[in-house]
Amino acid sequence: MATLSVRFKDSETHSRLQRRAAGTSLSALAERLIDEGLRMDAHPGIVFRDGPTGRRAGLAAGLDVWQIINWVKDQEGSPEERVAEAAQLLDLPVRWVQIAVRYYAEFTEEIDARIEANDRAAEEGLAAWEREQRLLSK
Image (cartoon, rainbow, N blue to C red; front, top):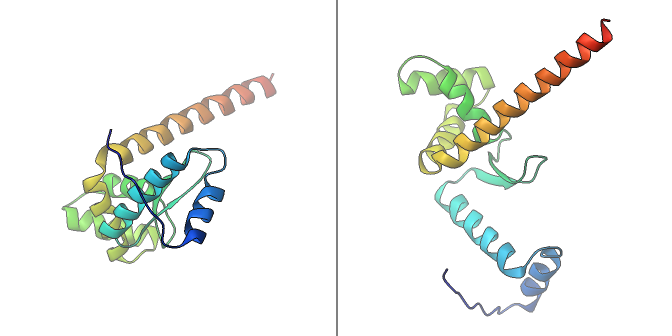
């Protein structure tokens, strides 16, 4: 664990941080915001958003990184062809898919875990639907 002491020139920034941290520790929020800020700085076009499955990386243009990578992985051909095909299927400029791929290259485990979680949720949802259909067809 590393420690960082921060002094705010602008007391309003500190106040906003405290208000935003309601329900969590100030340190945990500051660490998350710094981490996300560093990631966004290193990967322009990437943003972070909350959702039902938690906080995740996405494109400023809309889709989550894991969704784009899932499409890229499903394509065939050279890496360039797979990126181009995914871009066409998703109706995105190739450069946006490339941004997602670059982010994935650095945070592979995080994105792979999100893809696996989504696959599990889809399987569980399908199994629940199939059980319902069996019950309703009796």
